[in-house]
Amino acid sequence: MPRILAIDYGIKRTGIAVTDELQIIASGLTSIPSDTIIPFLKDYFSKENVSAVLIGEPKQMNGLPSESAPIIEKFVETFSVEFPQMKVIRVDERFTSKMAFQTMIDSGLRKKQRQNKGLVDEIAATILLQDFLTRKMI
Image (cartoon, rainbow, N blue to C red; front, side, top):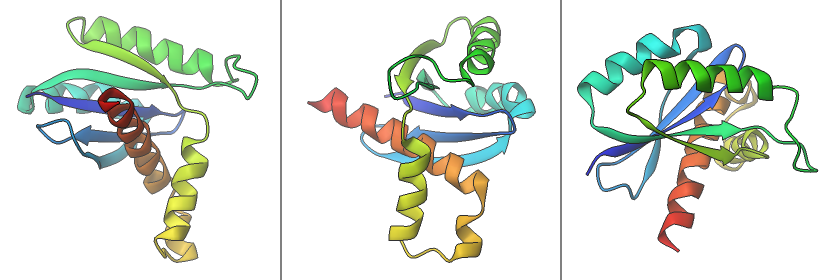
């Protein structure tokens, strides 16, 4: 089975997570500078079989798009042009960064480690993907 990849796109950094080949478990892959995402994905897709990409959809508490929505929409457009064959699934990303930070606290990471924003982005992408997988199984 092909993998599913999740992208937590941000202005500076992008967190990336991926499923195992059975699409059961989500794991953090990496966090990279956002301006390198397209070359990174071209390389990754050439090596791995990926059937779909989840991209976070930032929303406010009232369900309206957040301030970062236009930036992410522009990325989605660029992604769709670069990878027209790839299925894109948009998912609500509210609270994923807060959940990622709490996960870091709960796992006992030191304060210095919790300040690694790249790790927060990678964990947020993993949470996004695992939540998607869980809902898919229900």
